[in-house]
Length: 504
Ligand code: NG6
Ligand code: CA
Image (cartoon, rainbow, N blue to C red; front, side, top):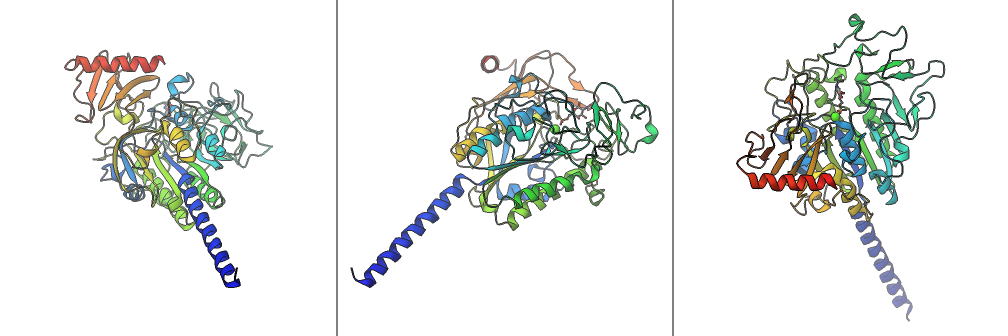
């Protein structure tokens, strides 16, 4: 071979190899994008501009929707936090686990450490995994010593990194926990937590209303932290206690840092914001921002955090290689136990949008939530009416990353989530404080339940009735016309299917 020919052959070979590499990388990016779940706490279907809110402005959430796929039938499994988060992380219906209920801050870890989870599955696919924000899935095995390493917790169910609050911001302990250790804990000021009795000499919201800067409406009258009465009793840990108004910035910074530190390998980040759950304590920068009082202000604050977080992805050049899923753990509540002007300043804003009910409810506003999926360059912006559920992320993301889902509840809806089809689930059981209902096609069937029709304290219709309820939620989104009597065949079909699934 002539020397010039040899050179050209070598050059050609190099070109072929580099072309193959590019294709490989391209394929890898398609299969292994970074994955971020941005999860709000009690954000309602009607709280987001893209879902019809007009009084309340959410430009950054709207931007996600404008650049991504907005689901009109996106569901949490449950109308409260713990069961929804359980399903999100395990892909299993929460009603299969009798302990999947709103947990106190002292509850043991709800997820079995042997169980498959979303972060564990993604770790198998080579991902680095992190959780920042609200946990509320229990910690330890029953008697947590808050002054020692706390385990099992997020690190034992698949998260490489965890910066969390244990339960909710209205429950003690009011401290952050980073990889099993209370942040800023001091050996000389040990933390003690009890949900049944107070510690001697410690003031409570019930006994010392003069010490409060936020009054309790129902519940929330135990230990006082930062002038706010909480659920449960806590002693010690003065330096470790969070400043409520700084929580949003703290979680944002941790989420941004996680991204910046993991740009070399695919990552999965579960960014679980604490807004707009009670107590609503916007940073002073956001006080008055919404005109709707603290509930609106903390939604504006959360919206800002999301904008800043998305900027970080953009600045790191990751937008085109990151699948972002935005949703909420359950529907909205206006008065959830504190006097905070949310009721008085609500005006024309409808956190539940066109849906009936809210948090704690079996009606649609309990579980149908904002649900947006964005992947720049891969997902065509638009709106999808496919029924999708957060529980399906396990099987769908397993499908995306070439892994196997061990859950039979979680469905691989990757094509629907990426907008390649508008076919989602055909049926879904939704849950509200251990009561369940069936959505199948355009229909929702709620079996009879004892209990009040309305929770008067939070002023939300719960879905309880002595009779069967049957709604066509396509024609009657607000569930105003109970068709149980008019459509006996449909009702029977729904009851049969419901009983079959619940009996599985
Ligand atoms: C309820 C609390 C409520 C809220 C909820 C959990 C009372 C009276 N109410 O028990 O304020 O903390 O639990 O919300 O204590 S969730 O979004 O975490 O499910
Ligand atoms: Ca919640």
